[in-house]
Amino acid sequence: MIWTVPNILTVLRLLAAPALGVMALYFTRPYADWFALALFVGASVTDWFDGYLARAWKQVSKMGAMLDPIADKAMVSVALLVLVWSSQVTSYILLPAVLIMFREVFVSGLREFLGDTAGLLKVTKLAKWKTTVQMVAIAVLFAQGIFEHYFVMGSMGMDNVMVADILQGVQPDHGGLANLYLGMIWSGYGGVALLWLAAALTLVTGFDYFRKAMPYLKEGA
Image (cartoon, rainbow, N blue to C red; front, side, top):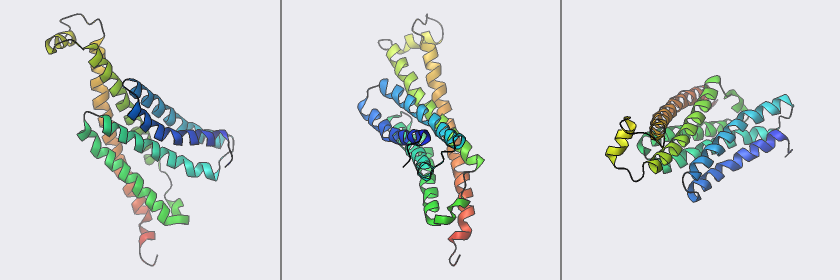
């Protein structure tokens, strides 16, 4: 393997996937949430950056082309597993997460079966939008965990009536609870909505790939 800058970034992104799982298991909140968010956002940025550098510097390699989609799928899959494991709204996250992971496995299986003809399953613009939406959704849901932690810590020792009075402006909000609450609510709803949108795009693009592969799946083709 040629250790060019794009390839190094791809390998680092690949290693970030298991690191994300380790952080979720052994780091306490809010450090686990902060590290997960930083790690995932960093990996998402390098996903675009390594491809851009490889093309701009004419350093496209077979190893990089092979590792890049693996790193993407590994990072997204581990991030979704962490979110399902740690989320308080598992029922709203589990189904879109399952759909996204099923599509990734299904399309990977199609590519492997097609072998030399797998080039017909080129990444479409809609598939790129799908990837962008799911990465934004995951990042927002990691941020929701941060808002939730600081809101709970900030309201510790208060009863429900006092918290409600602060949120309604009846009592002064010295700790910024209202902003933390809004951040927690909007990032939670927004992240789940984006994840469902990503799941819908996942189904559409997965069906599109299957439709393109159908002529090669028929017996005698």
